[in-house]
Image (tube, rainbow over all chains, first blue to last red):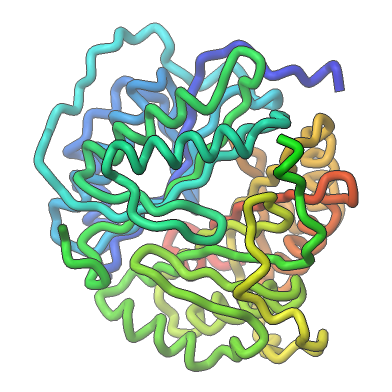
Length: 196
Length: 196
């Protein structure tokens, strides 16, 4: 498979679905999109999901802003998606890498979120050690919620949770192991959790 | 990392969230659970997701049945989740492996679904070839919908789509490479797709 090396492209992508549990789901999603500045990422929506691509800082910034703006409706909202970088099959297009690093979504409203994540460092024999290290870091940072099959629970204020996820996504890859995938599933305003 | 070998356990797990886009989401989920026979899988629900574990045939059978029963409400429903087997960190508990292979959910009602999937064969240097082979098989079987960043589109009748997913999950692992992860994201009764 010499023809399929992981690239050196810094393109980060996030393919996700945002699910407001209300009959007004289209209105809720449109309002969140309207209240989020997505000018720093390339974005495409199809009948199942939406993908955003760009510099890592902007992809995480837009993902968090979309979740936060949707949460502000008060509706029960779920966000599930996959962050990815360095896939050998990825193409170099559909991305805005010339943007500077200034974050454009700066709403710092607090919002409790409960979430779960899994890291998949590809083609890395030491991948389990990488995963355990990030889970330990979550405990140290106070965002760890629970151990479970196939994932780890991360919760707290949305800003602390996304900070943890962006750091984990940086820590879990290296020059030698460039292809990294991270799945997250997030629940906001759920009747199943109290909110703190 | 010699201490973390992929196990030989045949336990398959599916951690998923089912999102009916309606204010009545609790009623819709409870009705689907009530109409699905989950006796062949171990099941646990927390504030973000649900996990089922057991023999592969039953995990896929229950996953499909839950999606189908939820779809029958006519509501727009999204299912997202991760199938997993062979994780070195997995535990041997919480599973019903003594069940026979007789499927207990046999409702064959047709239902159009549009979905996306990604395969992550862990610690396998040839993983891209494994992925490409399964995408080619989707085209051959007539369930391939579209190419896209980070995933592949799979659509058609729910029974054909789940058959494809279960076969892909079998094909993409081997005795040498036991740890396999497959993510799926599925949309049913969506206003964004016509239904055929």
